Amino acid sequence: MATTADNPILHLKDYGQSVWMDNLSRDILQSGELAQLIDSRDVHGITSNPAIFEKAIAGNAVYDADIEAGIRAGKSVEEIYESLVFDDIRNACDVLMPIYQASSGVDGYVSLEVPPNLAHDTDTTLQEARRYFNTLQRPNLMIKIPGTPEGLLAVEAAISEGINVNVTLLFSVQSYIDTAWAYIRGLEARAAKGQDVRNLASVASFFLSRIDSKVDDRLDALAAEADNSDRTAQLQAAKGKVAIANAKVAYQEYKQIIESDRWQALAAKGARVQRLLWASTSTKNPDYSDVMYVDELIGPDTVNTLPPNTIEACADHCDVANRIETDVEAAQQLLAALPDLGIDLDQVMDELLDEGIDKFIQPFDKLMDSLVTKVKQLSPA
Image (tube, rainbow, N blue to C red; front, side, top):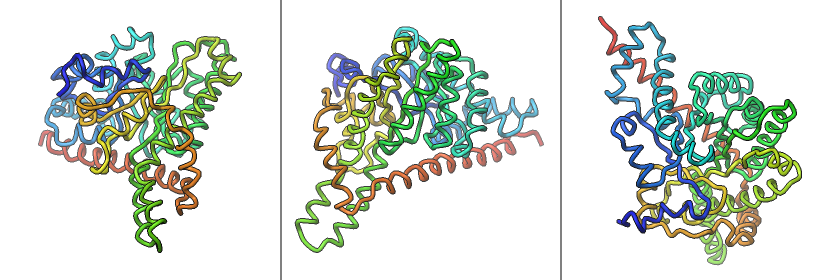
């Protein structure tokens, strides 16, 4: 294990990248583990989602006292759920507040997702984003909103109202571009009202490993049907490379957007860039490096949100260097070659978005079911 002095994860900031952790539970708050990770692993933010809360809350006795208090107060299961989650988010915001203050509001954020079944409901998403932000009353809170067409309308409105937003479940480069412009339109609307744009923050959460998992499966299937060794070799050579190539191309789009006149006009008013955040960064294929989605995407104005096991892997053996703009031409060529290999990337991205929403709805529903059971168990006879 690397010592503190040569710990690679501590050097990501030297290249303009922040480390956020994709995990939150009451255990890490109460034990002081989160505070320790801020110090020893340079964790400067937290992302959460329904799957994380399902894992944290279901079957965990640490929440029982608050559940019982909710029962006594006559709260519904939904209200009890919110009280548990809001407490954890509020406390995490407080732990990270010194980071927020020291970075002048660049880092130190905690992300809380609106209910995932609202992914195609603009109005209710915006209502919930407002309610969450106003209820929690923390300047370092980010509301996570899926980057669906309906979600991006809510993102634009939320930004115009001064709500920090983490736009999640972005897979295609076009979905990132649409997100960046939604952020810009929201800021422009705010500025047009004479309101301050300086203290707002947003990230665009661009997913990685899920892309490779799906594309690799298709490449394997095509290779199994290939009629010559050259085609098999071409298909195999593309495995494990599409997600990183996709992210590098998205970063080039980011650079073009921040050079635009519209962005420069906002920057002159003190607006912050919407950073690209690399999400889904745990490597699914054991044949690949467990830090490939860190090493290959280090660069300025980016965030990498890592699950705990990837944080520890990076602390041990990340190879830190500025690589976000290396091999960009090869990345573009790879994406351009996918149709000839039999891969329809647009279709893959559409499927991943639908699956991503479902992967958040299922644990959300499961958590609510487990809370119903827990409430029955803890309710007085």
